Amino acid sequence: MKKTLIALAVLAASGASFAQVSITGEYAYGWNTSNSSTGVEKSGLGVDTSFVKFAASEDLGGGLKAAAEMSLDGFARGTATGGDNALTLTGGFGRIKLANDKGADYLSTVIGGIAGLDGKVYGARTVNDSVAYTSPSFGGLTFGLSHTENTSQQGLGVGSASNNDQRSNSLSVSYAAGPLAATAALTSWDNQSTEAAAPNNAKTRVRAKGSYNFGAFTLGAGVVQVQRNKGTTTESILAVTAPLGALTLGFDLGSSKRDDSGTAANDITKSGYGLKAVYALSKRTSLVGAYTNWDEGGTQRANLTELLVSHTF
Image 1: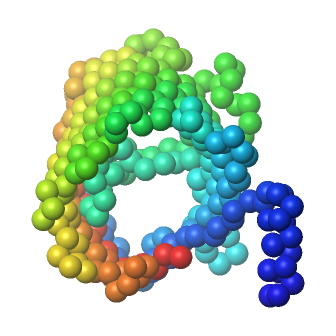
Image 2: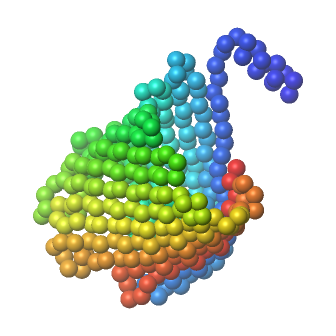
């Protein structure tokens, strides 16, 4: 220990720089039971969340800072898969971020502490490569530009013109000050093809969400509308959370509607709701209970009940 402290002191005295490194993660284990829209029932014990994130940052001088993070996710006996990864450069100009990540569902993260409906009422998240710029804050107001390539995790270079996956460019504006937080974005895709060949390919997307903390509770709402080669998809959410000491209660209500797809069977409306309770045993350990109920187009509604113990580090 003394040798380590002496070495660090020598580095500090000499003006040498070294990275700040951290290891964080989450492990959640528990029980769940589910019923699909076709009547299939499942239940049992198991791992819900297991990931580790390695992060390092370095002061480059002149107000510049570089940071990188890499994650391993889905730990099981003998296996682990890659998680979200990113490299960022920040300074007085704002922030540039290069990332390969799945990211969070836009609507299901309108506020924290809710069950969320991604992969249920809303589509499942996909892994993308992206480069994004975020401006400095101007009194709580920031602007962003991003380019995203849906590369299906195939590696460097496959997002080029030879790849048939769609690429997109986005312009966003966000505001966060005091109890209010809001963001909106406009996205446009390339490789749209034609209506006949690819009726589901996206053309443009408009999305917006916001939240307000009233003290006793936080209210959030959001909407996403995608214009496709044929028809539109509209998704929305309304959510509320209320802290009651160590206990936080959450409720969310969402819907998804497809219009004018050209196929009557595809023009459906989905809806769902979620209830969630989180009891903090400490800053890092919590008991979690959640119930989600949604329509997935079957003869009955699907539902999922989860009881978990979660620990972050």
